[in-house]
Length: 280
Image 1 (cartoon, rainbow, N blue to C red):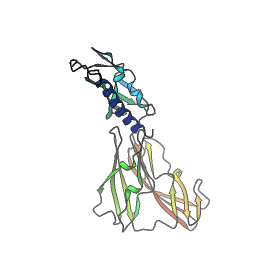
Image 2: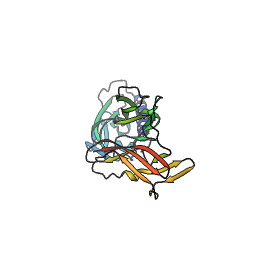
Image 3: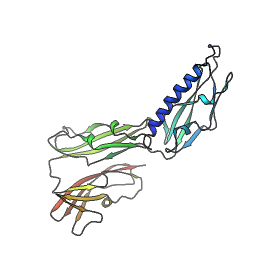
Image 4: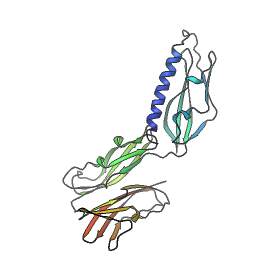
């Protein structure tokens, strides 16, 4: 959910400041050195990514030997560190009037959580002769933080020449959300001296994510062929048009696959590329 991570961070910061300030001002001169005790109704909390951050406090209470119930002082200090699939460690803090602090942890399972996903606004195909800006077409989105495009980083992992020379390269992209979960994508980058064709070929998406075993049909991602001021829609494929694809996608095996398209309609030909990421 967009901005969920920012809301969570603001909640944690504001709650910590408010709780510590309120309880510090009631300090009893330092005679009380016993911290409160935090109680949790369950060791693992199950939530949806659409739930408000305040739900992280469900079933949590705190008591102090001198002050009694100090549940109002409870704050979520952090939610980080993926324990396992969809599970993260939540750290809580509680304060008493003397400023003593107690901390406790439990696991939160976001049942519909998915790691950040990358996106492409155009194919990773560039003309030789100039250094391509691969980050201009690469983005990332997250169910908590929304747009993470400004956090995407990449490393060239194959190719002996510089990226401005014609050739096939591999770039490892990575992005980390506010929960500390890092997503990776190693994608092929094509630098070519060949003409892309006489028309511009557009797809519905240039990077798609599929689950293992999910059906893949390359023709469904075709959108349009743009030749000058004329746009030819490709759903359905017009009479006389032809489509050729190169590259096999095995949805039984996780990985990143590449499908190259060539579409011819009359005298116009367009070429482009689709990346398919198959996940467990």
